[in-house]
Each structure stands twice: as structure tokens, then as C-alpha cells.
Amino acid sequence: MNINDHAINRVAAVTLGCKLNYSETSMILDELCKQGWTLSTIKEGAELIIIHTCAVTKQAEQKCRQKIRGIIRNNPSSRIAVIGCYAQLYPEVLSEINGIDAILGSNDKFDIPCYSKISKKTIHPPLVKVTPASTFDIVYPGYSLPASLSIERTRAFLKIQDGCDYGCSYCTIPLIRGVSRSIPAEQIVERASFLASSGYREIVLTGVNTGDYHYGNLGLCDLLRMLEKVNISRIRISSIEPDIVNDELIMLVAASKKIVPHFHIPLQSGSDRILKAMRRRYDTVLYRDKVLQSVERIEGCAVGADVMVGYPGETEEDFQLMYRFIELLPLAGLHVFSCSLRPGTTLARQVENRERKPVPPAEITRRHRELSELGRMKEAHFKSHFIGKECMVLFEASKLLANGIQQCSGYTRNYLRVLVESSDRLKLQAFRGKELPVMIDSLDDDLNLKGRVLS
View 1: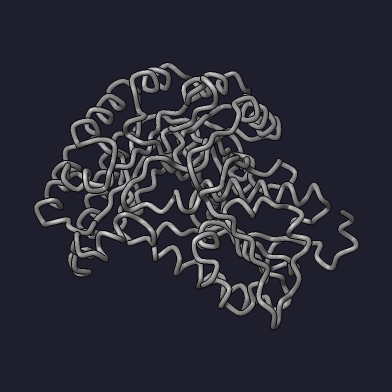
View 2: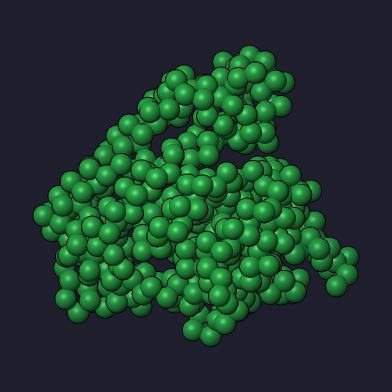
């Protein structure tokens, strides 16, 4: 393709949702640039704007619609391509939004030549390509942009897996991303090596169900051992299911100098009755055991968790069981969210058939607030243990504060955000992209650790 033959030559992207979406957006932009496109920003007036959407909750969908309409309103001459999960689930809804020129589903978004065929639709319906998820049989890669195309060269997202076979009652992932599929290990290692040679210091392994990685006879631990040979400082595992956090993985992380001591293990509920209704593959006894083993065997291990409130049929007793269960766990923080009925799921059918009764909105709000407050206390308690200690911090960003002080921020190996401030602007700016020892001095009101770089 000769890009000069087309009116479109500059492309910008906006990504909503998970780290997996970010890795896939980067891969799409990378491939477009290889085809002659110019990477741009919306403010610079890109001829094509790609909006990568999320559909994990109703709130996520609403945010997508707001973002789409805002971009269309502020960029009337740009071509607008809406891609990803929301496009896969609701192409007909998106087709009704005036100003969208293309709608590409979960697999169709990787059809790189298709982007050059998008034209501005003022009257006619948009280009729609949405292949049913039931037909997905291959997995497309996802990775951060090469250093030459990326502002930051600290953390890179690297996709290793897509889809899920777990079949949780509330989850629409099988309808959006299909069955579990994994990328060949040699391709992952090759891409990781390229990212390392491009200047990245940390690689975050991403997927829909990352721990379900399997290719041939290789599983996640086999892949991690292969990646340990790559010249990279840090390897981080994104969200991983409790039933996959086994002795082999814990021992591997505990002994590794590269795999960081950080797990995000979804809990969803602390009531065994609700976990069973959700069709989760564990109970509270197993979950507690995995968390305790992780923090006991892995030095400085931070374990975060997802928790859901308002699952239809969740009683006050179920909620109190969850609250007390979490209260006794050594967690580093919580991501609390409200249950959202997704179309086509078992839960949606149960509610429609009146087999499960929705929780009143006021109750959901209260439970969300109480668990969020508990999560904040857990986070503060965990982080306070690091005051007065030396931590290695990978600095990612710097900014000038209103008082004229320069602030640089980064993350420890166990994913604690650390701020360093100084009046020496050039000195702090030089920290970006470097992993440096920091003495932690305090914890601020926003639960950021603050410290000073050790010389």
C-alpha cells in the first residue's frame, strides 16, 4: 500500500479498559506505522482516530459512548473507527451514533488493511466488520510500541493469551473474545527481547485469563522461566485466577530476581454461597490459602484483589461474610465494583426468569462504600510497613507542581507508587526510565509513598 494514495495518513488512538486493550492498541498502531501511517495525536489533527472500547460493565459502556461522542464533536473532519469489546457486543447500538465511520469487532480490529478503506460517512451507515466470537480460532499478538514510537520506555504490556473457558455466570468475555487461546512461547520471548532491546525495563504479561496460558506442553511457569533469560529488569504478571496460583508458581516467584513480588488475585465474593452461584472455581478456604502462602513465602509480596458487590441474590449476611473475610486477609488493596448484568450471560437469564433477585441500588451503593473504605485501610496498612525502608523504584514520569517543585513518580517491584520531590528540576527529570534505590520517608493523604533517592 502506498499511503500517499490515500487522504488518510495520520492516525491517533484512544484506549479504554484493561491493560490487554492497551497492548493490542499499541500493536495495531505499530503495524499501521509499518504500512506507512504516521503516528499522531488527536490534538495534532489526525485524519483517523481509533477508539478502542471496553464492555466489562454498563458503566464502561457509558464511558465509551461519552468518549466517542466527545471525540466526534471535537473532530468533525476525522474518520472515526470504534473497535474492540463494545464494538463486538453492540455494533447495532454504535451504528446509530452519527459520526462513526467504522465498527470493528474483537478479531476484525486486527485487519490492518481495513483501516485504509475507511472513508468519512456523512449519510451512509458505517463500515461494520464483527465476526462472531464463537468462530475465533487464532490469537493475535499485543505489545507496547517500539521505543522510537513511544514516549515512555519503562513498562511494556505484552499479550500472551486471549479468551476464557471458565464460564463464570456474570461474565460476557466468551461472547466478546471467545475461548482461551495462547500465543506460541517463542514468539512471546522474541517480542520480549525486542522490547528489552528497545529500552523497556519492565514487561507486564497480559491476557484475559493470563494464568491459563498453555501452548503445547508449556504452561505459565514454563513461559516465565524462558522469559527470565531475557535481558529485562522486571517481569510482572497481571491478574491471575486463584486456582492457578499453585506451589510451583509461588516458589518460582519467591526465588526469582526478575519476576516481581506482586499478584492481583480476583476474589469477587467472600461468601461461598455467592461464589458457587458465580460458578467460580474456588471457595474462600482455597482463596485464603493462596493469599497466605504468597505473602509468607514471597518477600514483600503485595496481593491485590477484585471484589464485587450487589450480585443478584447477595444478602446482607453474604456481604457481612465477605467483609469479615477480607478484613482478616493480608491484602495490599481492593478494586471494588458493582455487579453489572451483561447480555447473554447465565446471570442475565436468571434475573430475567426471576430466579435471582437484584439487590436494591441503595444497598449496592452502601456496600460499595464500605468495602472501598476497607480497601483503603488495607492499602494504608500495607504501605506503612515500607516507611523507613529502602526500595528499588522504576521511575516513569515527572511533572512540575504549582509551587515550582519538580515531582518524579515510579513504582516499586511490588507495585507501590512512590513520589520523589526536589527543586532540582533537571536532576529529577533524569530519573525517568531508571530503577533507583529510594528511602521511603512517609505516606501522604492520597496513599502515595514519598521518599528520596539514595546517592
